[in-house]
Image 1 (tube, helix red, strand yellow):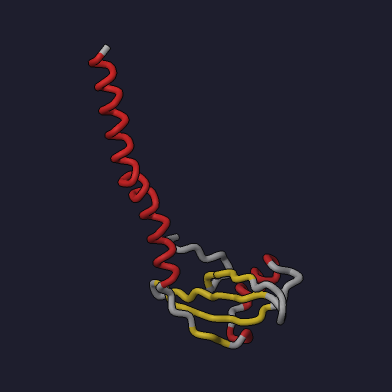
Image 2: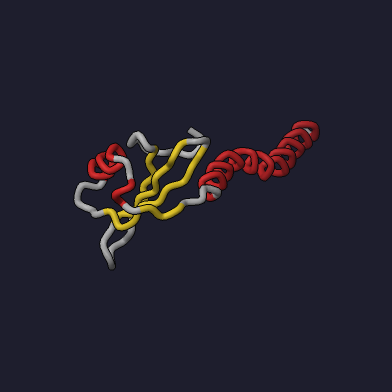
Length: 108
């Protein structure tokens, strides 16, 4: 009986002690994705400079919301467009697109 108690207690202590380490390992990937996106440096561009494929994708994704701003960044030699949707006084929506009109996702 004592042996079972000590085994259970030891297993519980090890599990509790290992939890922060396991949690840190799981969250490391999501932090990396956020960090990589935060590292993109966007420059503002005129909406007329955004490729037609990106504008068409934006109209499809946000048919009723006007584009307020357009920005561009370069990732691995490819351009990524950041479009900010919404009129003055409205909540802003941000979408990221590759130059071919597909959605940009960090690490993809």
